[in-house]
Amino acid sequence: MSFSILDCTLRDGGYYTNWDFKPHVVDAYFSAIKRLPVQYVEVGYRSPPKKGYLGQYFYLNNNTLQSCKKKIRSDQELAIMLNYKDINEKNIHILMSDLKDIVSLIRFACPPDQISKCVEYCKIIKSFGVKTAINIMYLSDYINTLETFEPLIDTHNIVDYISLVDSYGSVFPEQVENIFRSITSFLKQPVGFHGHDNLSLAFANSLAAIRGGAKIIDSTILGMGRGAGNLKTELIGVYHNSVNSSINEYCEISQCLNVFKELKLEHQWGDNLAYMISGCENLPQAKVMDWLGTNRYEVQSIVEALIVDDKIKKYDESSYTILKDLSLDSCNAVIIGGGNSVNEFSESIRQFITITKTPVIYSSMKYLNLFKDLNVHQFVCLSGQEINKFDIYELNDSGQLNALNFVCLPPPRFNGSVPNFGRIYQVNSSVNSDLKLNKLGEILDVSPLHMALEVAKNININKLYLVGFDGYANATPVQQGYAKDVQNAINNAISIDSKWCKSIVALTPTLYEINQQSIFQFLQVNVNEKF
Image 1 (spheres, rainbow, N blue to C red):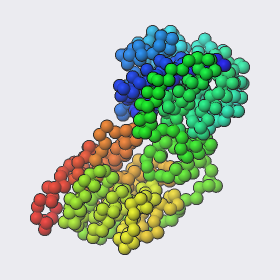
Image 2: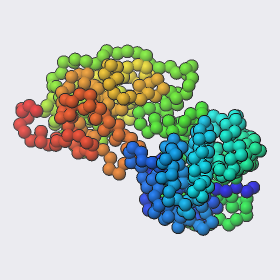
Image 3: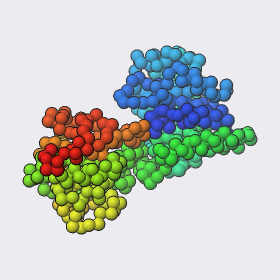
Image 4: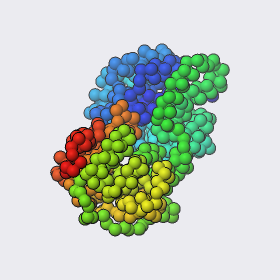
């Protein structure tokens, strides 16, 4: 049973770390890779410039590649990946210009309907003296369609090997073995397999691929990769050595796994109910992962919204009183976010609200318990399924709860998204249409601060004080997503209505690009003075 292993930890794991890895992680990784039966070491991407920050292993330069090459065995080969959607005939020459004699293999991530064009790119790469491969994504979509592979017939002199990618983690061993037996009967180049572990079948599917004729198997250390993760390199490596009667060197591998266990605790890749269901339902795990990352929706709601089956979709279609023109004691308001500074400055925030009689808008329910007893107008934004966090915060004073104003988005909504107590309003959909919004299935999705700003506009607030919008130093990719939501909400509000340019002010420390003042400057003056 002869097959090779391609490890793509730094490339696939970069989706969690933004393609930055600390030196001790890199050192532990290469120390283990040298001792594992890995033939190809795929260390990341080369890419034309893209918006936003992406790290060292996304924009691999010559120095980084030279360093990686020195850390692998002489019989191992360095590989990188290009994203088909980012490549054209001009930039491919630029990206390839200094790779000869450093990189042995370049792989394309390619959708099945673009194989012919990808073969043309492979011709260009071959002219640089580098081997090529095409990773054909979305295996479950074409597993019964051999016509998909017609553009690859007799291309073995151009495309050195192809790999079938179980993008959704939704195929089963029998299917895998059958498709490999079929395509290896007419394709002349070796065929590989990249499995995802949504259904805990990455190892079983890889063995099925090998039985069907696969020659190269993709894997990552501890299965690190998007969503449910991949086949574990340490597992397929130990198996490889077992069937080939080779000796395993466990010490360095064990040390590397300890390092990556810390990363896994931080980034939480691996199977969970959402990824299992997405695998069974043939759903893109990237979408499930993105929606889970918003921390606004429950797993079941995400999966049901993404499934294209109207029979299971039963939404709340109720309409509520439009929130507008309420009689308030102040034309200012405080928006309370979820940052730690709310706890840190809670007494000062209470004093500020009490002195100024400023209405309170909660962008989330995290700190509702700290201020719900204050005798001011209070509005609770129900972004996503925020109401389901009620039990977490032990909000058990029915009198105080019934005095709260809960604000939801227009229908449809997930059932149970609106409470059966308090006063219920909905923001005007025409106001929401000013913003760039997402949808989870049919459900309108608005970030918490977007929602709070809509409430402020609906009740004619002229000045907003923000507390608890701290920002993130050394943010994880998920935290970067949260931060982007906040900054976008602020920027959108200012771009839509110029009055907000000087009228949105942070009163507690923040890393966001926003006007800042200190909450303490308001507390040092006479309590009767108006702000």
